[in-house]
Image (cartoon, one colour):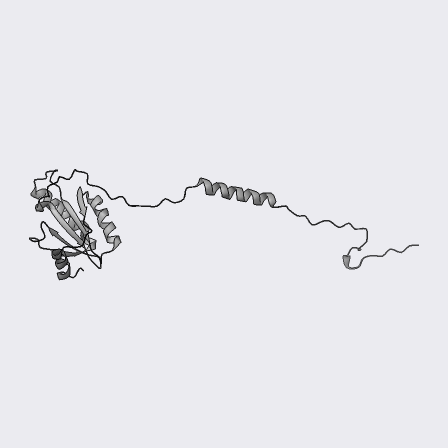
Length: 178
């Protein structure tokens, strides 16, 4: 009689009759092609971020050729360390005042009300602001003062970026803003 061999420890016999299964593989060529097609599609169809430029608002009202009366003019000199010097009217007759840049809103709003009251709230006699940045002023302050013109609804302002006149420079030096 033939003897049967019983596997020990529950192990199956390793016979030569067993077939080996191949390791499955996935061809990713189609997926890579699709990924590149999608990337190319989205790159070509999306718009890149557009440059952000600030529009400088032109005066709403036509500016006449003759100069404005000094009683309606405010000059704001932008200085170093977030300081401003401002005065009403002509620089020869004016009393300059120094302030921190954080109060520019208050300064412009108060002067706008005062000029409107002085001229009987005539809408044709609005305040004119002359903005004069200096070499020591920051670009941020310049942009902020332009924003204030829009916020306070100043109808006419002028940016005088030429070199400061000697009297303006004297004011700035005397008040420590340059």
